[in-house]
Image (cartoon, rainbow, N blue to C red; front, side, top):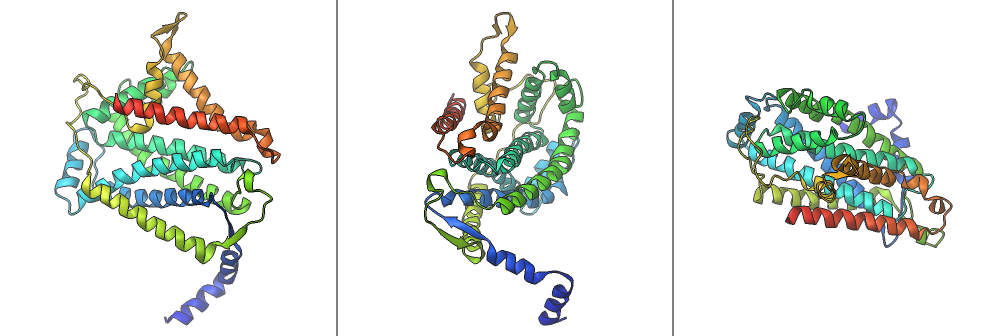
Length: 354
């Protein structure tokens, strides 16, 4: 079948002209902050990379406590280019979460969450939470002592929640402690449950962005500006940025392959100076600020409640910032956003350097 006949075959069955018309009619506002638009595209690219590299490794990984660690060793040492794809998956995950945070904080400071884009913020926020759980679940699959100890601490922290803590802890672990049941459960989360939810949320997020269009900062709303066509102008810029990001990920993957620690021993004491992944450090340092007991109450429980309230307030900002919804300046929520960013960066740095 030659190309013209193939084109006619598609156009006879699908509204190909309508799709091309839609692409031509989509415009993106051009202004001094439009660089933030591309952080969402970078995150999407990194998610695609994670799906591809994850599927390749899932073909060889064995989710069993007696074989999980060994299967990772075999992927890295015996499988052709296995070390590279595992390293690519590792650094892709790290950078995906970095750009998710950048995209979220950029949305916060530019007030892109304001009416009518509240649900765009909600879907993006939930995607960040799922991505962090992606990182935690994938972390355990290595089944080395560092991952084992970190997951034990994280799931134990979930058990400190009042009322539902016991259920959360049992649900995440699938047992009383971190065991083979936990490994199998986290594997199911990582390769089946979370990918399905992520794909649905990404689709909804992109659909909402297309429906509402790209937001413009409050300071530039109503001012004269130029709109540029998405295709090919913005589309080609996206592709060029993706290529640069891919080069960065490959460079990290080749020069800084992730280490594989000692195989986990559930009966051994946890290694000294164990630390979780960097995106959990701000929570760990927050827990350290609280004493063991406060007025007779468990300090860890109070700390977790404070962190939960802080995250919940952050999540509800689009619904609390009424001035931005009316198109008015809201310096209070700008400063609140700045304080959140400073706190996250400082506490992460303290946790990393301590």
